[in-house]
Image (cartoon, rainbow, N blue to C red):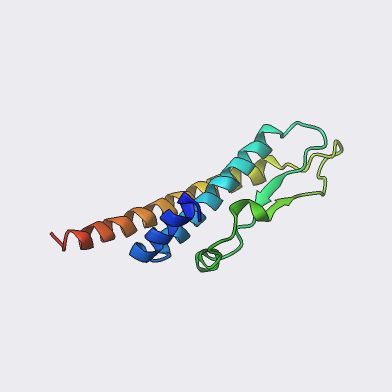
Length: 126
């Protein structure tokens, strides 16, 4: 068992799996943001195929994938929308980035509230 696994096991024993679930959701959101900004950067690259991560799942479904690596479900859009073979759509990417930013903000708020609650419990409500 490496140091990360040991740390995760200790955190799981102390805080349950909720902290890991929130971390996984934040990692997945960061991955999506990175993919979408890469798509935008390659908007005019002939033959570039857009990549994305599916967010068509509920947060509960996402949190049930505890040991799932965030990069494992990257989808590549092999269809072309343009004559040069590029599959990036500017409006779709900008809308996706806005949605991802909102999701990330909601997740960071949830994480902050979770740890504030733990801090309150540790301090015995003082």
